[in-house]
Image 1 (cartoon, rainbow, N blue to C red):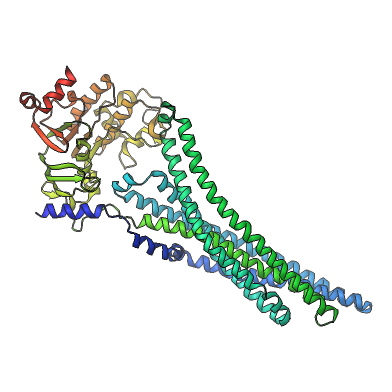
Image 2: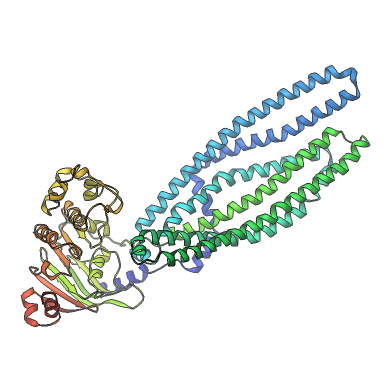
Length: 605
């Protein structure tokens, strides 16, 4: 009963996904999640904040210096006898102004470098974290999630977060400091003029609040449309051969145009909002300038304030309104970053491949495999395997045959731990697979699948897959499975270049490399899934010879379509609609004249 209970428990947890409540919580914590990525780099952001404070001070000083110079020029015009003293003062102000501008340039340069380098480090670490988590996700996740969607999370969404760190995090404080500094300076210069400038702030606040309500909804929609676009491109570029083979170009172009149009329309909505917001803010800013000229002009004529002070207020009003517009634009960037952060957190909160609470070691294992009343379904209770029981003794060669969709490959996937069974138990030397570290188990399993995947690199790397294996062992494995015959004919032999997916090699050559890959780690168990289904007869003979060498002294399970490859198996299982209908040797099953006999007769009639 313990195996049965474990099966129910792991089956249900493996299927668990992020609930709506969890998604809402992640949405609320999006800003907290954004900031937590930056915590390890807080000293650099603190330094950038200090530099921004100095930059703000220099920004505030420049209009003041110009205003003083204008007042000196005005006084010199009215008092020609004092031109020399005013001239010296104006020159001093000019030297200070240039020095301040140069200091601002130097500090701004270092601030930009610090922000961009720090942000690049954060995004690098975040991308690594997301990719590491993606590699730990169970197969169920990839069954339901398009690859383009995952690529969008790792690339596009992290780029959106990068914008937050570079353009928002520190600059937000810069703009706040600027607004506070401007208000204080204006109040010191003239209270009435300051109140004139601040009189238009309610209009700006109203526009900003209205904009904020629209922005988040549109940015969420834009990111969803972009993800759909990436998913479509990823899927159809990968399947371009099929598109061209069946002349589907017009249909697929139409589908792409529809998705592309939806993305364009969402961006048009964003542009329309900005098209209204920015001009409105400019109008309000112009209104403030008009009020300054009207009130300030009258005060100059009555000698209440100087023309230099009016100039200062014109400059300071611009410096006051620019941060308001900048903060609103930052909200735009922030919303995009929050949406991206939310999507990344949903991915990071997706359950990784489940690890056992108590790990039992496979040290000194004999590698007996046993299925006990195993039930499995990919989705709910649409059972693929139904009460399947069988055992494979150490060193035994077992073959599984049956019709398409019977559950043959599913058995291989369950042994590898790609999925968790819902009922029953799977045992390795009497230990439930639920109590075994899957990474430890997989190290002892050599797998050859029908769909061989080769990585960009060379032949040696694709055989040993970046493991620390000497070239001598690589060559030995290739010799054992007869792959060396074609490798030695290549110009660079084991250093021969392999492009993406190994498309320059034939199907049979890729399959031979896959056999060498499975053997090079000296596995204790071999799982061969339709390994010869797509190769020619000559290559199949080479592979069969290689398989015989591979299987010596190893526990092996072979899923086969061609019965010629498994006639020498110690036991053959015939599976039909999830049930094991027959089992026995090749001769025993032929004598029964049942399912296996019918399949054999069809293939050799």
